[in-house]
Each structure stands twice: as C-alpha cells, then as structure tokens.
Amino acid sequence: MAKRNEGKQKDASSAAGSEEAVAPGEEQEDPEAEEEEAADLLALTALAQMDLEAAEAYQIGADCMPDAAVARTLLEFRGDHLRHVQDLEEIIVEIGGEALDRSYAEASVFASLANAAGALGPTAALLAMISNEKLTNSTYEAILRLDWDEDAREVLARNYSDEQRHLRWLEENRDRFLAEEQPIADA
Ligand SMILES: [Fe+2]
Image (tube, rainbow, N blue to C red; front, side):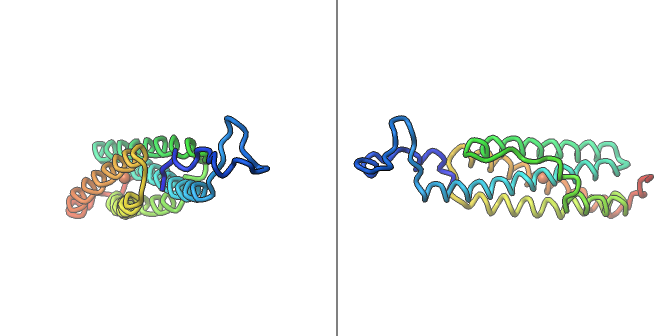
C-alpha cells in the first residue's frame, strides 16, 4: 500500500522478446502495483473529502459561537483540516489522482449536520464537532494501520495528531459548555 515508487520500474526480463516490449524510457505498469495505487487513491481521496467536510463544519460551528475565543479555536481547527486536504492532495496527484472538487463541501453531510446543530445553539454545535472528530480520529487511526510509504505515513501521522488534539480540546470544553449552556446565538 502506497509504496508509490515501487512496482513501476520496467521489468526488462519479461519485456524482452515480447511484441509489447516497452520502449526505452517508458515504464511498464505492474498490474498489482496499479491495483495498490488505485486503492491508495480511493483511501486518500476519501480522507481528503472527509477533511474538507470537517473544515466546512468548523466554519459553520465558528459562525454560531458567541464566544470569540472558542470561535477562533474552531477556525484554527478548520485551518488544520484545510492543510490536511492540501497535503493529502499532493500525494493524490503524485500517484496519478486529481485534485478535489471543493464545491460540494457546503452540501456535505458534515455541513448539513453542523447547520442543524448550529441552529440549536453553541452547545449542540460543539457536540456535533465532537461527533465529527470521533469519525475523523477513528478513520485516521484505521488508515494508519495500512502499509504506507514513509512520506505518506508522515503526512497521515501528522494529520492524526491534529485530530487527536482537536478531539481532546472539544471534549475538555464540552463539560464547560454543558454547565454554562450558553445562550443561542442570534440567527
Ligand atoms: Fe479535526
């Protein structure tokens, strides 16, 4: 998985004498390597989409927060998620995939739930962020169990570390929010 530069080298022995011999300078794709890259692309693209949706949800959450410091922190988390998208995209493009379509994020499930929670008030919005973070954390944790090359693993581990930090902060603040039950922000 994600051994991106392996399996793409020309197999000179099998190509020799074949009508489909690879011309000098060209690469012969290894079907197994192609399958692995396709699986990598699916996983990384899904991950980047999830990060993009989480970023959108944080924007919605920040917009309904009356506490400026909390809103600022949520926007910092949004920035982390957008950086994840960018870093994942670099890998995706490197292995032959395409950059993400960012236009759909506003209509995503994450965004819809964040909008619904935001309408109920900041505490509900914070609880929605916690649900999102539980999903992003468990997804990164699962994906990191796969066999990634060093560069991809570094990006994934860094992103997962951000996710753990986000969830920790939200859970630490959840009790305070529940205790204070801050007033619902003006619509
Ligand atoms: Fe996060």
